[in-house]
Length: 508
Image (cartoon, rainbow, N blue to C red):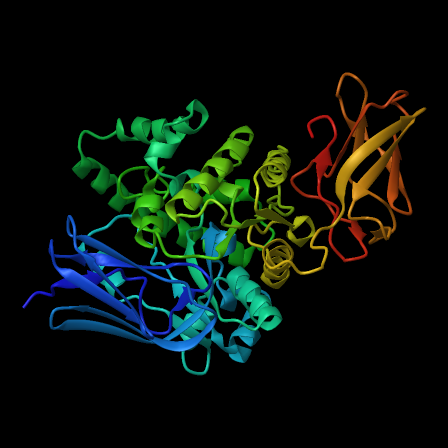
């Protein structure tokens, strides 16, 4: 006999419900049926309309464990060991996706993880919704962060999200839930709806990319065949490239392509591709909307470096969309500024600095945002730097300051102003009141330019909380920029141990 109603798959035993906010519980059912939702003495009844229902329970203080009961006539679904605390959505691409077990000291961290008040929910990575995907989603569930009882769940949690949750749980002593909703290699456009992307010509181009790609195929069946062939081709190519890297760890990308052939990645853009605009918004993000949340943590931008000048607009749109969908325009959005990175043998095209600048702009212009500067945490030739503990901790600092009102400074130095005097420029910074700290023998990464904005390498020196820069060939320097590069050594910090954020004075 078919069930009279269902509950959204995000609800399960061991979950965390958001404290101090209305608690939304929803699902599907038969029109005009009455659904009753109860949470520890609080009960709400609603009528199913257009086969959907949503009950809104009043807010509760942190605590638990609790039971959540949903009934319709003689049918009941019960969830147990529910905690009331703070729920954070961990979004983005591969650097948010990177599992704890694969991060620096990850195996040790997994083995030591025993935090019963941290709970984990990983949204299933599904690029299209067929019955198999829906069945897998129904069987998905929340997990307790305890490796002795659920090793795989802890091992596969987002490493950034784990360290973020661990720090908050210890500092606040409230349950923390992490909802992982991320996929490696994805543009921000994959996580935004068609309705939003269509609003602006600069973002509409992501939809046009899809439309142009689909012109290659006479039918969806033709696309499916091309996609299946790509899976075979990529598997063959990866076996060759893996062997090359194993035999010659220092081999450059160009040589790999010469030997293995052109890399057949990503898969063809089409209705089953996770990289299509709007795709993961439809198949992943919308599946957990409108769960009551405390906020978002986000690490992404690498896959939008082909259109870096559009990124500020794209990220702003994503923040607006997510806040709208989760029904709270005040939701904190804390995100990571891209670290240093360049592949071995690649020319520095200086597109990552534009992404970093866009991220800083969004932080400065959009309310309730926090930016974790990670410039110093990158690794040469590794787009997935392994020190995710520092990233998670820096996001936690942003949360403790911006969201929880702690009296701390979560920022490294940020460019404030410049003073031109003769052939030098004196730079002043926020968050450097206690002085600047040099890691290494020399101050590096600075360039200056005259009116023509042609930058040349500059020498620099630290004087307490200021930096003085100059270049002999520029008699009248007008502009300065710092670490305007994809990769370089980072050497300037404040007394908090946080790095100077990259900048260019002629743009900011």
